Length: 196
Image 1 (tube, rainbow, N blue to C red):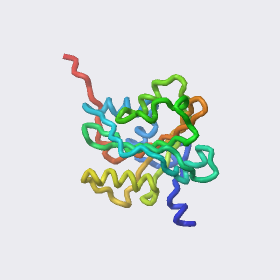
Image 2: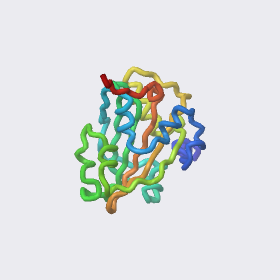
Image 3: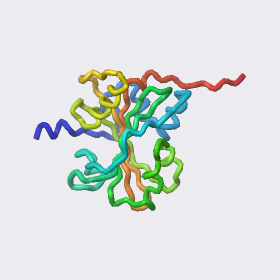
Image 4: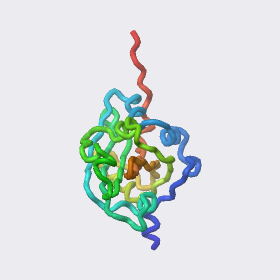
């Protein structure tokens, strides 16, 4: 039972509950498209797809999606890169019951940003943001660390990772996006346009 509880995160509606550093809290609470904000902090933004396939949703996602227990969903995981540095690990789940009329572009996103699609569609309803500190044992913390370590960047096990998630609705479909912020996001600085 204890092992299962360590694999869950406590999600809160207010960012103060996770006690994130102030600079990171600004990233966690930023409104609008995270993609647009990251583009404003880099010369070259890119979405690197890690995988997109059917998989069981996580235990702490099931209830949000309306399931009594973890159920098979479509899963997409990507790294968001600014100037080739990974700064956010993003995890999306869509119930298998969703069809192409609910999320018409999901299966064909490739390396396009999901955020751009969500914020550009007037039919998409966005829920409230929720925030969490992810222990090293949480599946998303493990996956984020593995993706980051593959870049040759070691992440100390004791370092907490902060995440936010949001439930989106379109027609009869739901879609849950969780974004895990890597410490490298704190090194980003806004790009200023050259007005000469």
